[in-house]
Amino acid sequence: MPPAAPPPHLLSVVIPARDEEGLIGPTVEHLHLELKLRGVPHEIVVVDDGSTDRTWELLESLRARIPELAPVRNLGAHGFGRAVVHGLDHSRGDAVAIFMADASDDARDVVVYWEKLREGWDCVFGSRFIKGGGTIDYPWPKLTLNRLFNTFIRVLFNLPFNDTTNAFKAYRRHVIDGCRPLIAPHFNLTVELPLKAVVRGYTWTVVPITWRNRRAGEAKLKIKEMGSRYLFICLYVWLEKYFSRGDYRRPSPKA
Image (cartoon, rainbow, N blue to C red):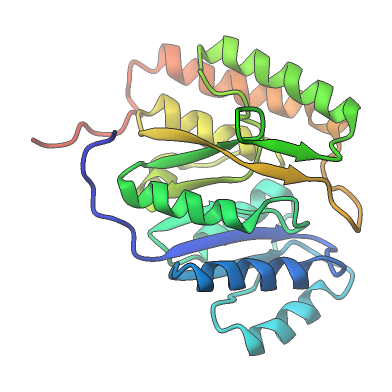
């Protein structure tokens, strides 16, 4: 168990979204209902990352019914990582969870993340590949590449965690701030943030989660475009781990 730490008071769920008119409504409504029923104080920060469909229009309509919804537009350069950072910059919570707009993540797992953060952990990582976790309709080519790359990360960092590339994770605010600057503009942010948190000495725990493939719309992750970007971020953080002499590690807690 980590040292006792003040529990967080507000959970910001950051959801990057681009052309998600078919799913963003049910995703936000289901997430909000689950968090409300479980008594989790929250805000939902959906970042419209340059959508050309009705995503923003639907978000504005939802905001009239869900006061916890705080949609923002990323008017700068686009990309998954840039959208997440934009959402982090516009969120108010002292805890943050990154959630996918396509409803592939389970809202019930967000509640588990919140409970673990309140126990005192700095980070909560979900794994689909441990006992209690699972996937539904995962395309086998992507699954194969996922397992190979996560094994590469485990060996490179000597890390006992097998689902680093999954975006769905939760952090206390001071972890986000302690990992800046976040430089990954695309899906490689999903690797940069947890690896930096581990390398910089923040406490973390792993819980089983479930994932299902999107039921509408088009997947945004293009594996053939991301390979070198993932590798770059891994080597970037690996260099910090072994050659920075601890310059970026979190300060030791005062006795």
